[in-house]
Image (cartoon, rainbow, N blue to C red; front, side):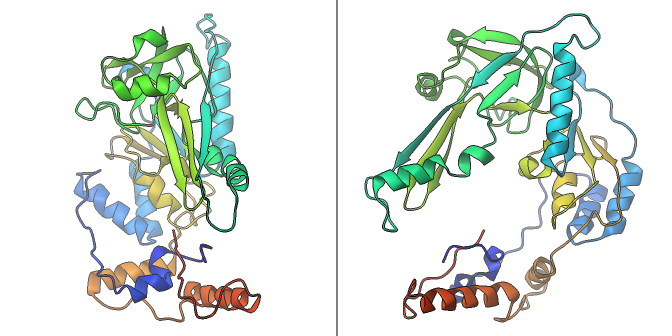
Length: 349
């Protein structure tokens, strides 16, 4: 019943609830009308708009104050891992300065908390096992082991000081390391930090010099996810990651002042748009590796947005996702897994 056969608006429950669609039109990340217009065209599948962005933003970006480099965005994990590893290795070898910084390994504290009475016919032991094997620990933004050294390019994964500009996606450089006792005051400090510090196994925290000039000892944070009917998973880790490069997937939701986007090998619908729209300004965006097939849009999504704009209907009940769901439900009922009379509808992501 919870298999993902399509988008949220393709779920049977979407129609039955008779939801009212509202199209949000105000853009907050960018205030440049030209950039906003080009990004809107990329989102709807206009390859020409991506080409124009590649032409305008084809020049290399300069390194920002404090030595913060542009964040490279790739479509594939392999490219990200290769670049981050090579840059970290170069630093550890002296990086041309002759000084070899210490590699510091910061390990996380991972935990699971199963429900006292899990659902779905599972006992607490089975729920515990599923939580331990959940995708949360694989997909969590904060790594199980964070390897850092002085000079490493990093990105903040949590809002620390919104008024001061230290937010999710803020870029900086590791300036040094401080003992655990250094946290608890200033941005990121407070009672919530003292609670997670009891769990976190590290003995020192990284001091990061951010692009805005702030120098902060970054305390660990708690990342968590609730699994319906099973319980909760959590990870306590310093909210930083290496940021010479990141994937498009991991960049979702971020705002980047300096970003270099490679349009090579974009393999999913909407991927090029997500990557390009992380930029705040044209001046802070560099586009490389333009390919003709880099921009892809799902026809169902395009129809849905058009319906929101015009007030029309986006499709019918024979939508492919709807049809697949009905077929799967019928097959499950035939096997005795779901009674045909039970009205339980799919939840989509």
